Image 1 (tube, rainbow, N blue to C red):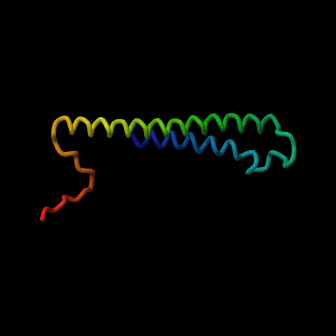
Image 2 (cartoon, rainbow, N blue to C red; image 1 turned 180 degrees about the horizontal axis):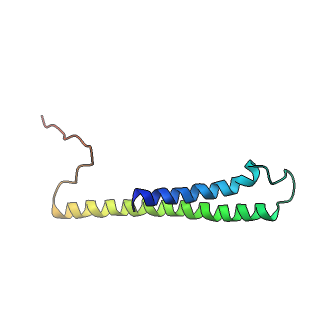
Image 3 (cartoon, rainbow, N blue to C red; image 1 turned 90 degrees about the vertical axis):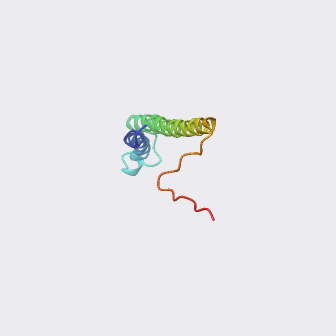
Length: 94
């Protein structure tokens, strides 16, 4: 998955958090009163978006870890050295 895709998943997560917090942050839900229909809808939809976004981020991270393990196993099967990470400095032998 690209960085743009991961950024979109993170935005979905943050939008869900905002929808959960908005009724109380902008004070259209009166304190100590029963929740209005609008508040219930915001919290329910926001919770669903937040859970979906969080699950998406976990799935992307798990997929990337799986790819890294597969690359390491393929390199070990070839008998080669593991690839150098981007920006790594070579180790000087003494």
